[in-house]
Length: 283
Ligand SMILES: NC(=O)c1ccc[n+]([C@@H]2O[C@H](COP(=O)([O-])OP(=O)(O)OC[C@H]3O[C@@H](n4cnc5c(N)ncnc54)[C@H](OP(=O)(O)O)[C@@H]3O)[C@@H](O)[C@H]2O)c1
Image (cartoon, rainbow, N blue to C red; front, top):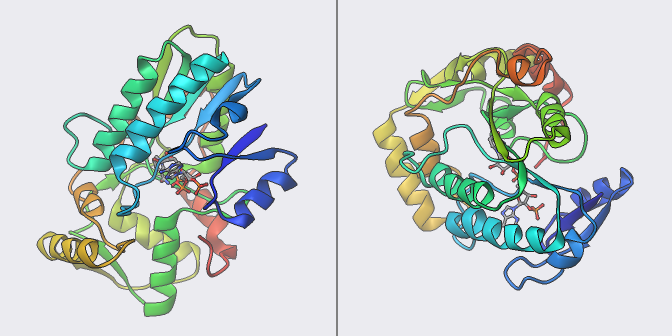
């Protein structure tokens, strides 16, 4: 297995890849350096690139649409057999935020590539399995609850999400890669429990032994704060995307994993229990 790594990819992430017997290959997506070599001899391309984090130096259009379009071209030339693209539940050309709109554009690149494989659209990914990386959202809430003794949700927290355990998601991705469809199949995935965001935060707190008050930040105030942070910080702690996501549900069929991949997804509390051993400072 070859994992492309950028010059900025954290050292602990690379070391983890090596510890599992895979290799990293240094790439520069903007200059196109190392990309062909990384794809050489690959049968399956797991395309995981993407992030909801707003960074001035890394616009969403580049990160999602452009990088995907470039990689699709190289994958085709390299004769890669199949692609499994990890995209996101809620993508659409008219989605209410740029993260979902540019992910949707990236999906078009894959759907029109002529490659066979799968688009996987998960809701929030939760749980810890292996390696140094973690859900940034979950880590932020854990830190907030531990350090401030309270949690703040944007809006009233009634927007519903359907967290899926990272171990179940990976299992679905592997099974999708093994299917022999000739086109690109689309799978929307969530765990067994659609849950209001406020309730999710409450259960996360309980999972780590904290029963803290949960306060609401009105959406108008959250929008103002997002604009301010986006203007003043390279990596803003609150963004317009987060505010937009709190205005819509992010759910699919509760039995989506079982229906499409034939096994029962882990209950939410089992996933949240994996944070009991949370080490401070995880990314
Ligand atoms: N986390 C969730 O709850 C969630 C929910 C739905 C969908 N997703 C999707 O799942 C995927 C993984 O998400 P994650 O939360 O695990 O994100 P993550 O930990 O931040 O990982 C993002 C990956 O994308 C790479 N990346 C980011 N910007 C890039 C750029 N401009 N050029 C090249 N590579 C870039 C990063 O590279 P480095 O290794 O070099 O840092 C990293 O490997 C993403 O596609 C995301 O949209 C996540």
